View 1 (cartoon, rainbow, N blue to C red):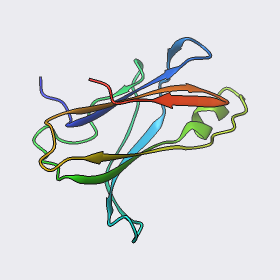
View 2 (view 1 turned 180 degrees about the vertical axis):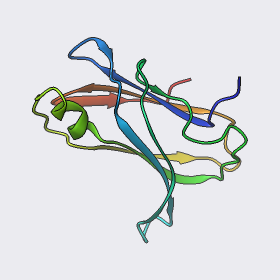
View 3 (view 1 turned 90 degrees about the vertical axis):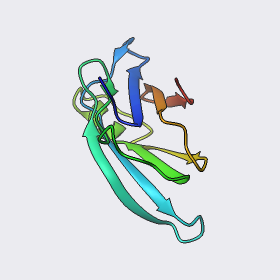
View 4 (view 1 turned 135 degrees about the vertical axis):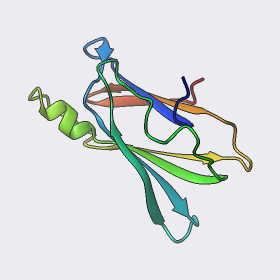
Length: 119
């Protein structure tokens, strides 16, 4: 089964389980100085905290700067948990030509987060 060329996985490190129901959006940024963004996709993490269907598997990406945004405030609000980070925005650069797949994990707690390029 093919998957989106960009996927993500959100883990709630405070609860020690996947963070399901986190709204995710993916944008491409046009020019570092312009700050203009174009939304490529929107999705939501599944029961395993994954979002593997952001883009159609046949999507061909270009090199450039992208932004993945996680609506963490809404996620924590569902359980009446305060958070210092209402939104996590991760900027990353894809080379030209890009690899066929990128995975962006987010380890999340109400007062910290960590991310890295996954596999």
